[in-house]
Amino acid sequence: MATTTELAELHRLLAQLRSSVGALRARYGDAPAVRRLHNDVERLDIDVADLSSAMPAQRRGAESDDVVVVPDTPYDPSLWRDADDEGLGGRAPQ
Image (cartoon, rainbow, N blue to C red; front, top):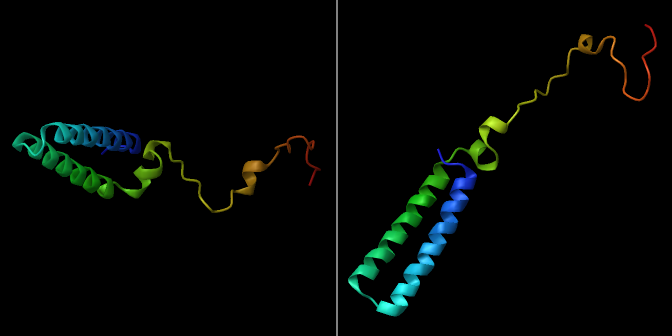
């Protein structure tokens, strides 16, 4: 599956290709080869849009390897037993 960075690069390159085909159309008119290139660019644009919409939501914002899930449940208080509060000194004996 493509990453957000790869899709952004693909969109950028597709825009450059579209611009180049537009320049060819301005120079050579509506020649069959230019029409085919224009149709190919349109097809690529549709395929990239389909790929972008098929991408799972978690892959759009960040790579799934970079996501760390932190549970909403409270931590077990025994994890903090005998721990110092940073900058506040030790805890009072209980």
